[in-house]
Image (cartoon, rainbow, N blue to C red; front, side, top):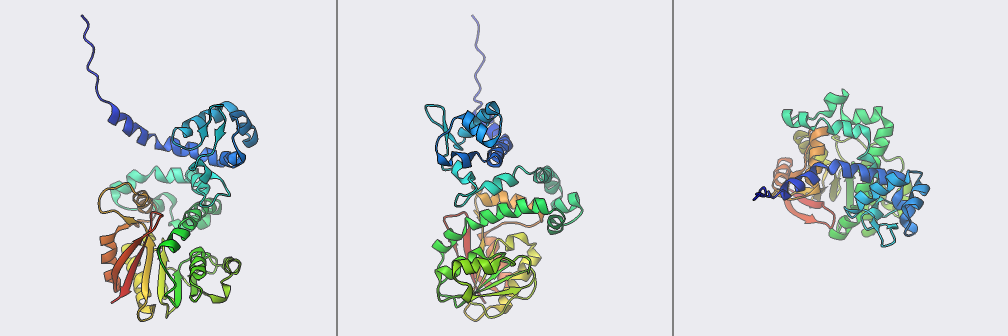
Length: 342
């Protein structure tokens, strides 16, 4: 009598295999975004042949990509075999609110893939690898490679824009007389703050090149009469007398020493009774699944910077002369971390 071999439980192996193959899913999503599949499906269901014809791709290859993505909830096939958008694929549309198309395109960029291929070196040495790989820092590399910089900043700009409404819904800015948004770029968040708080004035603080389109943005928002634009760099002295100083996705880009310097500059400039508002991911104390943990690896690889836990922010605030009073969560995976001068 033959004896059947013992069947081993391989579920953990295959669960790990799905994670290992995550890069394949990333590429498939990026290809769908680049082709504009979600855009052509915005009008309703289409067959694979119709989709392929409209995006200029091979029908058989398109079918295989859509089939793979549908298994992850990105696109769906009906009983008749025609494909439709899902809530996930809908965010790949170029015109979608809170679109993630730019981020999908960035994740397919060969420059980015080359950089991530050196994560081992960063973990081995504890040092950012991008300066070694490129022979220059991140900002200099972006200046030298404007096409890649456009893709990179469009992706993170879209991600940042998707956070504005959750921030405004979670935190009331109406009690501040003047809000200073530090290294604010065009100023999308500040424009939203001024719309939410009709009696508040705003100071947009960034470089001249970053704010070149800002006047038009604030005019369109109907709040230009309450806006002042001042220019300066990351670690320069800040405009004085603000009741709130906002640092959105800025402090996590800094080394520990530079982060303390930037916040001390706010401490020096802030009005009596003012508040420091740092808008960042707050890493859970326990090892939970959180987008901040993957962004943290990105910062480590490129800049030697980091995301922080609430305890680490408490310590950082104290070093800069602030007491952390609370962290206000939002419906996005970010929080408004509030501090008062001491």
